[in-house]
Length: 207
Ligand code: 5GP
Image (cartoon, rainbow, N blue to C red; front, side, top):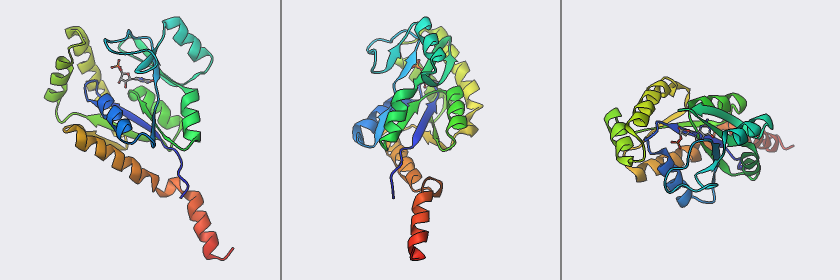
């Protein structure tokens, strides 16, 4: 079968561990996946580098990117803009790689609308208590921001039905393998392999 790149959207509550899962997935299966780096107007956290975690932009720069249609989608999240640069995603998909977008609900819905074949995964911790514990222990967020993020999580939970799969992040290693297996299975879906079916049919008819 001809391997076509899949556009994969990964969402999950802030503190669900989705970032760690994606980094580990790419470390293990480097050849298969490309991780899209988003643009944002939020301030870098300690340890984050421009061009690695995000492209950090001013509001004016971000609005220019919107005007020039350089983003596939963008959304506002807790008073900042976040968006997916178009060029990289298109390049990588064309090269047959699976491209991962780690984005929130509004962006995920826009992607589903523009790319109906996109695969949408939602990462969740095993419980709400665990979610709060992880947000607090990260230690990078003020109490006020944690409260905002918990409120936002409650709103995002309303959109969980839009996703194709839920991935429970309890043990990191298991979770990474679960995600990889889901994606591998997706490659075999009939809707992604119409040409292959046509070829088999033709050959069977002796054409
Ligand atoms: P954080 O500030 O914690 O890095 O990210 C906040 C939220 O923005 C997360 O849910 C993250 O997945 C989402 N996000 C990151 N990049 C993008 C993007 O390009 N587009 C959209 N719509 N959301 C994004």
